[in-house]
Amino acid sequence: MVAEVLIFSPSVALFRQAYLVERLGAAHLAALTIEATPNGKVAPELALRALSYVGAYQLQVTEDGEMKQELRRDNLPSAVARYDLRDMRFMTLVFDAFVTIAHTENRVIDVNGRSPKMASVVSTIRMDEAPLRTAMLEYSWRIFRLSILISLIAAALVFVSLQWLLVAPIQRLTASMVAFRKAPEDCGRDVIDAGRRDEIGVAMRELGTMKTGLRRALHQQTRLAALGKAMANVNHDLRNILTSATLISDRLSDSNDPDVRKVAPVLMRAIDRAINLCTETLNFCQR
Image (cartoon, rainbow, N blue to C red; front, side, top):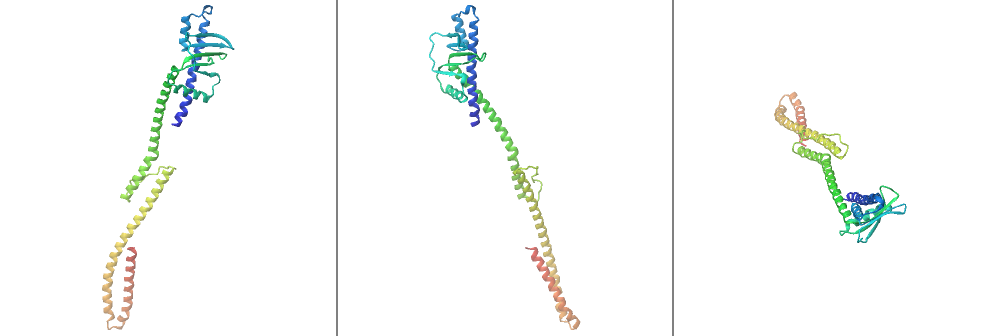
């Protein structure tokens, strides 16, 4: 909105200045037409036509300070404001333009300035301000419609850019995280790193690294769980086998053969170590 105001203000001020300069040039051309008449005599009908062409009640044309031509209507109204275009600053032009737009009622104004046809000629006209205000409002409406069109195009471009550069990548990231939560082992919904160097690219790469680490941890945990299950089965079988061996060793220790009784304790210690090893292995796998 601020940008629109900064663009509109000088535009409407320059339009007003160009409108008035055009009227001053028309006054100069009307004066030249009058000078071209035979004997320089001005018929009332010709004077009225010249004033109607300029859109003025009165016109004066001077060259190098000398009056060249003056035309006026009967019952000349008084001017309520006077504008000199020969030394107009930018802020003065902007202020006068908004003053013209603000006055809803017609005013009679005097305008003087150099003719755009010849720099040595100064034209002065007395005119109604209402046609100028109407032209300025029509110009402002055209500027407003053009500004709305430019704003809509800019908004559409910004929307498409944000959708393409920001919203769509974030949606892919969130969809990938949701899919990973539902099926961590499925790699089909992983986000492909497009080599972006912004924060979105960093998030994509870090998410991929995190998924890889989690998949490795889950795979390792799965293997350890399978190993623990296998060791539990082995431990169960070994316990049954070692229980039978323990019973046999007890019977060997009761044997009358001295050599057999000597071997029995050694066999019992070996069986106990085997049982302890299986138990410790099973406990480790269950952690």
